Amino acid sequence: MADQAHRTLPLTGRYGGSAAVRLTPAAPASRISLRAPTESLAALTTALGVKIPVKPKTSAKSGKRHALWLGPDEWLLIDETEADLMAAAATASALHSAVDVSHRNTAIIVSGPGAEATLSAGCPQDLSLGAFPVGAASRTLFGKAEVVLLRTDAETFRVEVWRSFSNYVFGLLAEGAGDAAL
Image 1 (spheres, rainbow, N blue to C red):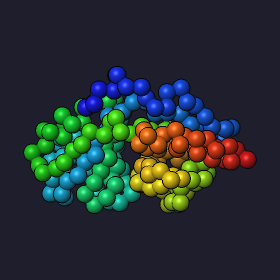
Image 2 (spheres, one colour):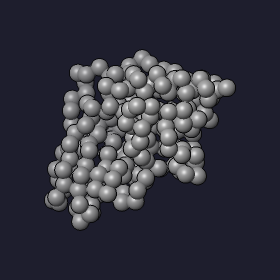
Image 3 (spheres, rainbow, N blue to C red):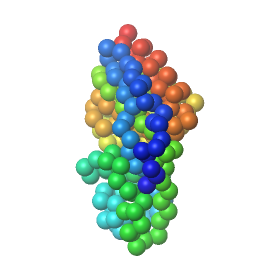
Image 4 (cartoon, helix red, strand yellow):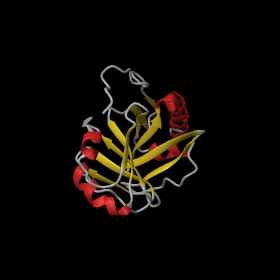
């Protein structure tokens, strides 16, 4: 895993929102971009300690570790305890590619009764609870930035974004939070 201790997080000290929604930078996490064929998933599930989902727009969780389906052979794994996901993946005796993207990404937690409306201000995807239930995950656009959304509960989303776009996404979320309060 990349050494996070010597890097300033891009959204340190930023907080925002409105009466209807809170925007907070997520705590540091380790992340890997995982690519693998279907026949490798059982070994990777064992090695990584979380079920690798195979259904589109889904995720799996084990403790503070998440596996998000991004494509037929692509996942984003996030460990909120900053565990070494690369070392765990290396124990799998199955064909796969794992790339540490811990320094590339950061995350913003969008929570409160206005969370869905806040995200809908910049995302073309239907984020209603019926269409995007708890546990749903998707790579999509927010404004002009690519993000990965994970709905962690009825009123909370984790927005994974490349750190170079994080100030832009945070600003756009802040505008959406103001609109959600109206």
